[in-house]
Image 1: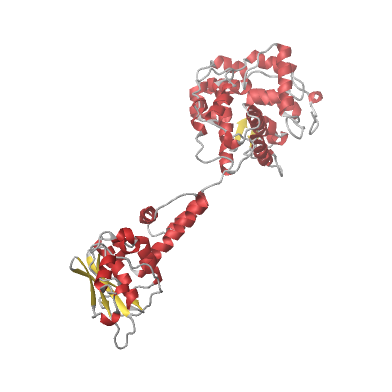
Image 2: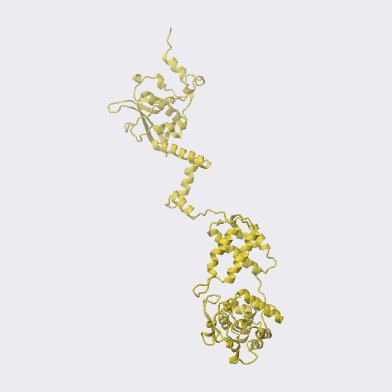
Length: 518
């Protein structure tokens, strides 16, 4: 029997000589994939440099990867005995040497595969070491196939190959944990873009700083948030150690009332559920009120929502204040309404002993209602001829002295020995007493009518907005804009001429309790 010639057997397994061999033996006809080459690179550390004799590292056995390109004329490693190989063995493609295998020699008991690639426009040497010639030949054939196809994988160094596989594993883990797919190129591109903007900071440092400023919004029921807000401010409306409270109790009461109404408009809602339409709906409930009253409610809700942002109940980017109906309305200047001299006399003649000093100080001293509520009789008599409005009492927390005009002195004389607060009851009790007095005399209610009358007639009497502003605790511009030319000097003389109808004797001295309950 005639034995087949070795070349014929080689010819049947070489795709260049037998184009149908691939269909019969796919292993002989398939080119190595990029992934396979990268994986193999990670198993065998490459040795870089221009000399193929430097360094020694041995590859693990990895059978089954020896594959040929159809254009390669190299004899497969399985058919070639290393005893018959002349070293250095040149591996070609279309007659061009693409890789070289160097044989063993004294002091080097291994085979070395050497090739060159272009990277960054420069030629770079690459090499790998193998225990056996067959291993080196199989990998060399794969390498030639990839080099012939122009594969860029062959340019990877061992470290780059390891990094590439490690990066792909990290990306796969990221996908498994988040469901987000990110390619290696996209990840590196985004990193480089971010790092270029950080001015020396690492991406990790930037992320940590960013997370430190980002709030995680907590879901908080609107009613509960309102209750917490009100409770947290309650102490601000309480006077301690004889000092004035930071917030007016009346203001604190109004804020609580308005916010409870706001929460009651949207039962069951969380703060983070609020939308612009909710704010529009809330303000729409107050169409019958004045623009100023609506603005007051807008300001309170804005203050509350700002607090919610600080508490992480609402996102800082909520944009709720962009609601169409939540814009601050312009308020037209309104006519100042004030009491006339006859009305003042009628009220002072009829008022009881508790209410009378309130009327006199408001109408003839120009004190605000809140200032009178905080006023003590010691403040009236401490400075001769003056009512001392200390920072504890004054609206703007700035001390001022108010002249006690002859008419005011006459009305206050019976109270010379009285001590304690000028009004010892609650603000509501004062409102009820004033309303009852006006009702009995058929005098219409005028908002801040006593103080407005004082400022109006004082300006008419002295024609000096600076002097009037100093007495009233206001700005000269405010006096000029709102109180100038509202009354004549003759009317002012009548107002400041309202005195008790008869002289006061010792029998008329009044002694009120230092503090009365409602």
